Length: 319
Image 1 (cartoon, helix red, strand yellow):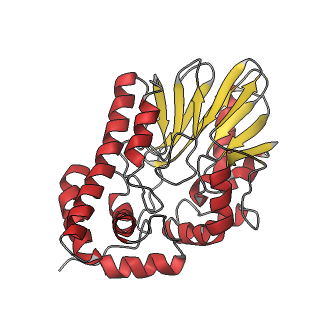
Image 2: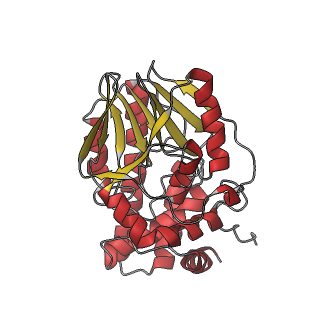
Image 3: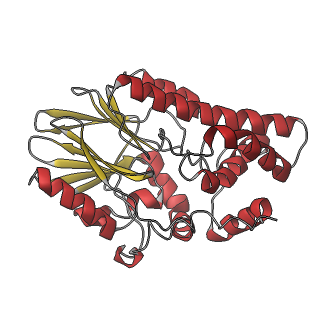
């Protein structure tokens, strides 16, 4: 008999190899073998950082890399969405402004505290310097709805909400001149999309809206930077296929009148051969199937994950 799976990513303690990739004169990607990515945009007069890492201590490594290529001040931090693993490092950059969509702001108000506690419990390695996070939550200083344009000197940077997917507040960072897109967790590459706060019905259409920009390069939320239109296509298609496959399997189970436990076991078995090699597959699947089941049955909007709800769900599905 196999031993029960360790909760979420608690067994994931190996250090990851960081890569700092230059995409253009203005854009860099900070990636680490499937850990959360950070995007860097260097304008004429300042720097913008997209997604901050989980703690200021981890952000310090990003700052170190930035300082190897520029001494311009880090003026803006963009939160592509509200998840703690993306935002709690913000103070480490000492930015003038923290930017987010109004939807993301509202999610921080509604569920920021619970999400913080929940994520710290799931990812001990990513939050190992958690005492470096200042007390309280990370709050945007500027919010927008739909679209916001920043000018870093002559460099145009667009913050766009192209639809719901990973969360209701998803924001992408788009450099029209270089055709480079920082997608946040709307796109993953060789990494399993986390969909515990997702809108399964909307996500594929949102990916079509990303594809319509025709990016020449794309920095996903997790995984290597995609540096050609062909790779970008592959990243978009892989994420779209995964979301569609979870949705199809869960819906078939719900239609057949099966309970969450049965639907989970069937969906896991169906998807494992195709996606089981992706980073954090075992971690994400219980959360993803639970959210999809909720959406297919009685909860159009994601329910709040608490540390306690995480544990109960894991016990039910994996215990």
